[in-house]
Amino acid sequence: MSLSTSAYTDDLRLAHMIADSVDAKTMSYFSSMDFEVETKPDLTPVTEADRQAEELIRGQLGRARGRDAILGEEFGSTGSGPRQWIIDPIDGTKNFIRGVPAWATLIALVDDGEPVIGLVSAPALGRRWWAAKDGGAYTGKSLASAKRLQVSKVSRLEDAFFSYSSLAGWRKLGRSQNFLELTETVWRTRAFGDFWSYCMVAEGQVDMAAEPELNLHDMAALVPIIREAGGIFTSLDGEPGCTGSNGLATNGLLHDAALGALAADRPAPF
Image 1: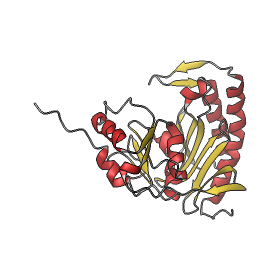
Image 2: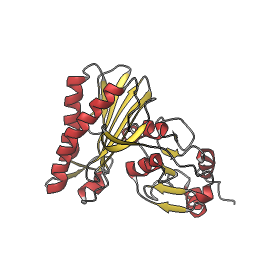
Image 3: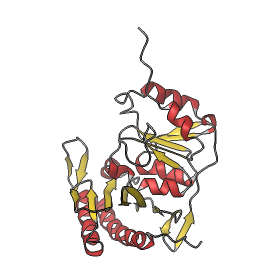
Image 4: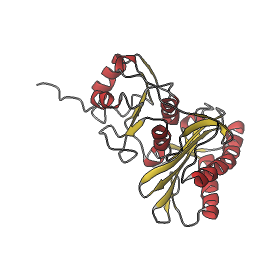
């Protein structure tokens, strides 16, 4: 199908070119499983593949978009200005180091505070998802071979398919009781986790996805994909886009009900 054009079409094409290069790099590590795993101060794992993937992305962006700022998970922030590229070189590092194919490189462009480009490339799954502001959301192996994405039409929580990453974090956030009640209310739950939950929402396979703890680099690429597929992405408190420290993505029809269901737990009675 023909792709809709956007003011950011050239940036999206660049993101695809960069993702092609990064996929080759990350897959070489994933296929060989020849790398060391370190633990960062926040106790999350990092590998040489994470660092080399981000360095590769930064190098290509520096040559093609030298005036743009960059924020990456592994090397922080460089540059300044209204346009900022946000990179998660390997989202799902824990899967990556165990040989589970559900991991991806996330590339986003934020323009004047708004996520306008999102690309998720999961080479071990043979999948890629992307979107540009006002240009639609798509999945496929390339720009030339793509299917447009559309969220589901499910409108009741009782009929919804809900995906999440894990149970950890909901108690710390003070929402574990309501989270568990929601899992018992909806039609089906599965912990696909990380980027995949949200891409499934955009595809209409899953109706809602949520996580209690997220960083900007985890979310920025997902926001345009959800929005351009017709869905809504906010924090658990309803803050738009990736401005919060957690996330909820739905098909839109379920969003208000999901926000209410995942509100803070009521204090226990004395």
